[in-house]
Amino acid sequence: MHDVAFVLFPGRHHLITSFQVTYLQALLRGEVVDTDGRPVRCAPDARVVWALTSATHSGTRRNPVPAHRREAMIELVADAERLPSLVAPVPDVAPSDRFATTVVRSVELTLDARVDPATTVVACSTPEVAAQYAALGFRVAAVERDHPDAPRRPWDVLELLVAGDDAWHRLVHPAALRYYVRYDLERLVREAHTDPTVSSEGDLTETRDYATYTAAFDDASDRKWAQVAPFVRPGRVVDLGCAAGGLLERAARDPRLVESDLYGVDVSRHLIAEAQHRQAQGVFANPNVFFAQRNLLRGDVFPAGSVNTTTTLALTHEIASYGAGRADLETLAARIFAHTAPGGVWINSDVLGPEDPDTVVELHLDGSPDEHPAVDMGSWSPAQVRAHLEALSPAARLVQFARDFPALSGADWKVEWADPAPGARSVARLTRRAAMEFLYTRDYTDNWLSECHERFCDLTWPDWAELLTAAGFEIEPASGPWRNDWLVEHRLGRGAALADATTGAPLPWPDTHVLSVARRPA
Image: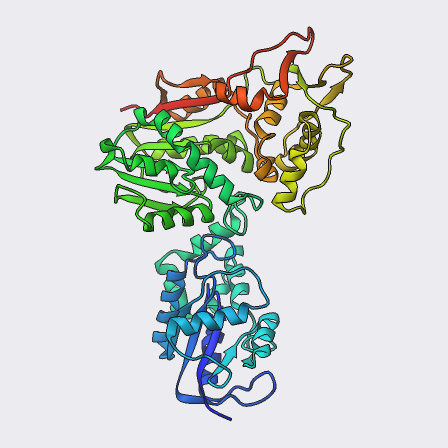
């Protein structure tokens, strides 16, 4: 049997344990047998190839440590142990029965070396993954699996870290532990795992269609920049909830900001990755543009008093919806106030709850609530959801909303149906807030399940004014509620009208949006 040149060691490698290093050293010395009981003979110059999987994915519970940190940790441990090693990053891929092939091909391209069953043994403890390598003809060394001296696999050790169990210190390799301390990775990992608002894939929701979401945000960026630009103070400009960077793309072209540093911050890994891709393509005219995946609610992002302008556009309703409601908005306001320089501003634009939100009104709708019962669309594809919703009348879509919105958003939302006059529209009786929640959401057929997580009407303008002044801001005169008449004509008013619940008389549409310019006193 030929001596092998490579020990292929695939994994995400967020931690390296002492056992792993001891095992790899024994493997290189020829002291290990494969899963078929055959001795593994390594050539004198054999090397361990650390296939660093999910290298393009970070900032999530599944991959809390970015690839460049993981690679550096591997190199540090290998150097400390004189363990001959090579590192080959492998892009993140969806689960597949061709995963082993993807890893092998990526390693070969990175190292420009032939990795095949004749030259390589695979060190892998995950049975399902090991089976894929075995199916390709590779011999497998089982590492931790069924080994009496391996009390924990690396991910188990990482979970001890998250749980605050100091036993992880004894299991991790000392060089890896020093590296964790040097870069405060323990905090990074724990925050990624304990953040209650972000999914395991690094986003607020797992049902969002990013193509349509990004396109919609980009389409509105010219209008949004025109709205906020007059109030922007040069210096350090931060766009919280930056999505794919559409607003900062406009800001980067503004001659007033040529000397400014522009920062985009978003909780979504997908959107920050797209923003950084655009930056690499030269989209931003200002070279001083920076992006970071962060959650401001979890901790400060910028030093105190260092930011001249913060913008939040269509963000605050998401924070209230996925977190603790107004309490999280108060936390956000406090953190923004803390990082705002004296004289600096926080500019917020978002949808708005109507005044007198608890007043019962009538919502007159085309169609009938009896034409189609509400259905469970949780397992449907986005295309199926969209096709179903677009076939419903406004009244039938309200029936579906009455099922999905309370279940997904947690809101206390109710509707009663009145008997309409012959030939008249259907009549729903509900609060003004409940009516506007439906009307704001009903046309998002591309992202219905995602949008039904979100509450648009938690705060009215008096609520916002109270929140901002309580945080210490002064409200500038340009601030206040306003009604988007385009939205009324093309969205809210299509097949729908508001009426007084007592007299049936038509009611005007309420203000739909808020613009607040909050200044920290100089």
